[in-house]
Length: 130
Image 1 (cartoon, rainbow, N blue to C red):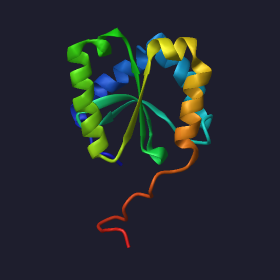
Image 2 (image 1 turned 180 degrees about the vertical axis):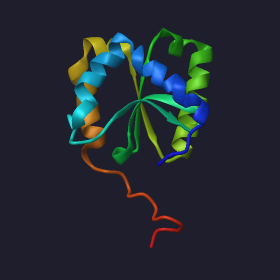
Image 3 (image 1 turned 180 degrees about the horizontal axis):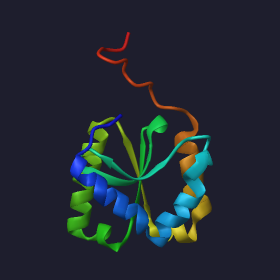
Image 4 (image 1 turned 45 degrees about the horizontal axis):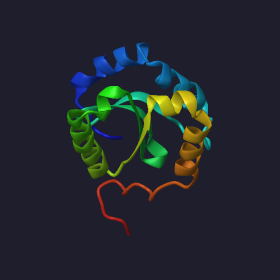
């Protein structure tokens, strides 16, 4: 289980209640193990961030980006965030809200591909790989 700031939990709960149209569209397609039998969580607190969707067995974060992510400031924040998540061993996939709403089949195709084969197994508790 990945550590997270406990102060983020109420905000994550609130975000789950107020999903965007794109988030709702993706959630309806990834929930209940519809993608390669993988569990996805929505608005999941990881480290200092709340990610849109998280698939622990694939070590995959899926972010849906609205317009604010395409500004210089938004891109810089996303680079820092993606680096922090990568440092935790996670891969980050980003899709625009428009991609989700207008090209759902393409987005799902990428998700199927990225969750097909599991990443390296997690390290055993308290040790290195044998």
